[in-house]
Length: 244
Image (tube, rainbow, N blue to C red):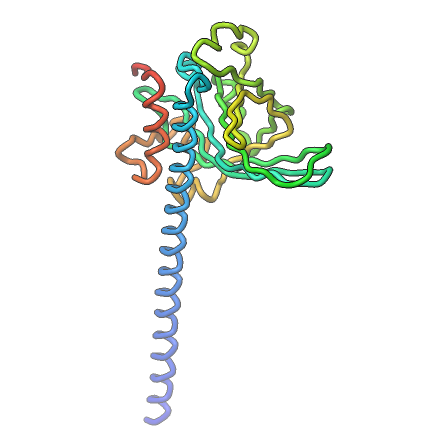
């Protein structure tokens, strides 16, 4: 009888410990998911704020007619760059694609790249990229896309009438801009690699960047996590809406 009681106690102890481990694992998973959602909302808000500030820069904003032609918009806020002779940069941001009635849910991407030359110190730069056609957007759907390798990005024009006098740039697949130390201008971007943040996209949407940007599983504004809606909503304020 005593042996049976001992075995029963041991079994119950193991069962309790197993249940506790499952509870802890579940709570850890929920906490991690919550942190990811907060980080995603913060990333979307930062990107929206950068875009809003630039579009409200008098005589130096992205031309509205140019934005109306864009198939997708990427914003990478506060990309950090540092180095001595050999440098590097890295950051993260969001990309939304134009859809009927507005803009898609923002997909999360990372940006990185190196550079060689005289450079001392560190800086923080905001980058905005306009993808002007389906081919340019399609480049984003690979595991990684190198600007200057698979595709090139021309310096985008600024100002209200800038687009009318830049026919060459109008043929570019990607137009790029940067803002550093308060100065905003078009920038010819090279040596930059953009790749999907698989973990964040999966955590926030349960799908890949490809699915988000191709509309394979279209996410309506109402179905988007509330915290990330601000980016497509901000794009919609400054661009015309295409009819379904």
